[in-house]
Length: 132
Image (cartoon, rainbow, N blue to C red; front, side):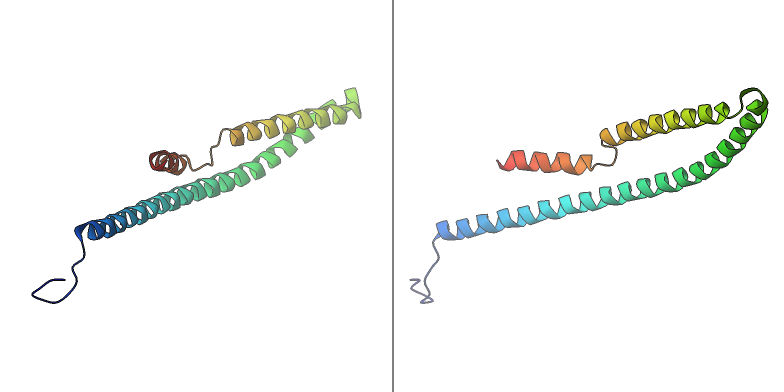
């Protein structure tokens, strides 16, 4: 007990421990807050890029379909006398192969993780390694 005030004194070791725990908690919350802000920024960027890709892709698809229809009609009209119905079979096979090629190309783009949160994941890995 403190003789002048009559209150019990808290030993320095307990105060140091509480201050240390409070400091660690404060740092942890600050780190978590920073990581959440980074994740939110990256999610916003990915969302914007994805929306832009979808709009450009949709417009490109519409234009491409009109052009494809016109070119197909021209080729069929020009080759009908010489080939008859086989020109339709050849055109269908060509478009099917083109569709498969585009499908595999899109799949390869997605497999390269273009839509991942690379910076956020790297920072979280660093934090995990530092804490362990």
